[in-house]
Image (cartoon, rainbow, N blue to C red; front, side, top):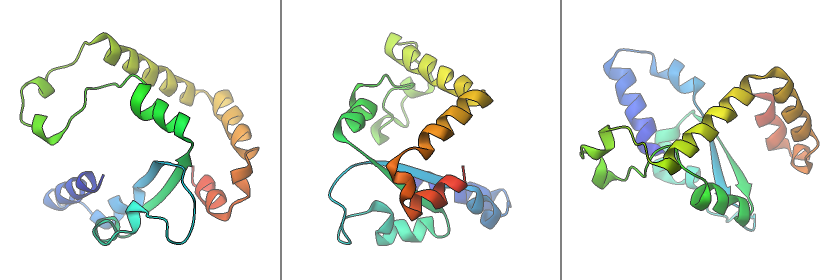
Length: 147
């Protein structure tokens, strides 16, 4: 995540765009595994390197239970293959992947996008969100106003 922000910043400055304006439009929602919450809980965005890179960028974490976390990270079909640093210069990563599992992931992402364009679906989603107990928490209300 931090590398992506650094690349966007570098690109913005190189192209003589207004980094402050671009930075003000970036929002990061981190999906994290739910753990015991306390003032001592480790939070990636509070680490010194993260704070330096993320200066002024809005970050929120949504903690989810293990089953949901595992479904997202381990079981759900992905749109693309893993793109670890050892593959960055490979020719393989530059070609479209037509693996059945990746096509299924792409199809699922496309369907979610189409659903998100439907105003009725968005309104039902917002209503469902408003019914969640988390809506009582101040940070969530502030984040929710922005979407």
